[in-house]
Length: 121
Length: 444
Image 1: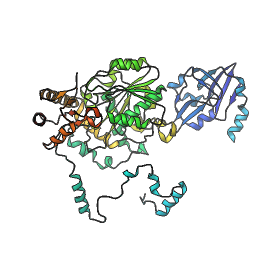
Image 2: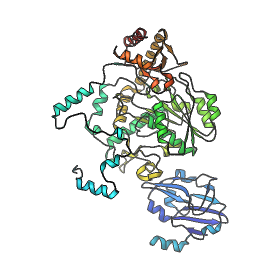
Image 3: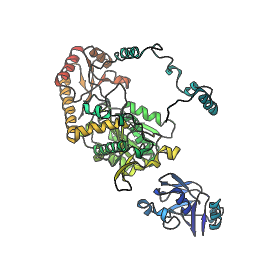
């Protein structure tokens, strides 16, 4: 199941593990991404906490945790190739995986259609 | 663009918008005793009269005395080419670039400066400079705290007392505990006391080399101790001494900072000075200040840019690594020219001269009755002597003989009123050093 937040993060839930990244819309707004400050493996986050920072040529944006949980793994390939987030934001540009997720956390997030409408507004 | 200052009507409108009654109210935080009430000069006098008035005031400062002052700022020789090149209008009148890529010459000069600081310290990256050695040390502490997310810092008792004061001022309103190790003038850092304090709450250990009292040490073992506890080792270092001493990088230091005044800046009764900051690659993204990078334009030509700007205040605001949004460009330029003129060998020669002269002085002073050298172990270009009476009074007496004999330590440490920090640079001939010894012999 994939859901989208108002802060332009996407969440893909498999059981109680969520894969998180920023949306294609977000990457195009940010411009060329120069650095992704990945969260620490093992760190715990509550929903809406600042998870990490994505830096582009024009801004440094906080990325918010769309769900609560503990960071299980991070996409280390982004360390040397942050542009992957631009090229494939919703696939290879995933940022981290969070475990111990309560599916109820996704209830207030948007589905694909709702998110598309949200971006247009 | 015309540089017309705002009218009183515009000023009043701005004051009204922010809800302040008068301009004076904006300065209310400065104690009344420090407000300038009036200038010591009549109104409406001619340029010649102003010049004579100021010259008379300036003549109350002595510039003719043989200087043995140190404690972080030193009277080194500055070749005329430094003044001459740094005075070029293109450099002298430029402000810190806000459209930086247009100012390629400025950026290249800063890039060269950064490269030299990396060579001097052995570390991976340097910034475009900070205000002075004290604020640079403070910034390095903030980086360590930011990096480790710990809230305790252990500082050697032999770090420059003014730098310590700056550090304490800056961290007053954040959750950070500064633990100062007991001071032992002339002795190396007490590793046992440090070991007893090092634990996982410590973000950094801060040392100075040579320390404020002139003692030189190898802090490699302290680096190991700090790293084993997950803390950083921060060192404030004297750049001229790096012409001779083991580099901070070789000792395992994580961030090296220091005062660059000794690299081509005159003493000038208090400034402007130059803070340098160099770090391991690992902490580059937390490094404060401007950073110049080398890149390639769309035609493939080498060019320079301001880089890693997402750390800075104009982008991160309250999450910026520091509130500094400038550098000491002109001072950094002077340091760059000075170092270019010296070269690696020249810097080593200067350092050797300082060491030799201080060593000669130490031997002669050790033989003066009533005077005791307090430093055990190696020193570089300065050391502390204990006098039989107040160091302030001895220094005053010797001014009458044309000498500023040194820095009385009682100014910083009330219990050390008879202690005098004496420093030596390549400028001092043997005759001048002998005159200091004679003057002390006669005065004590």
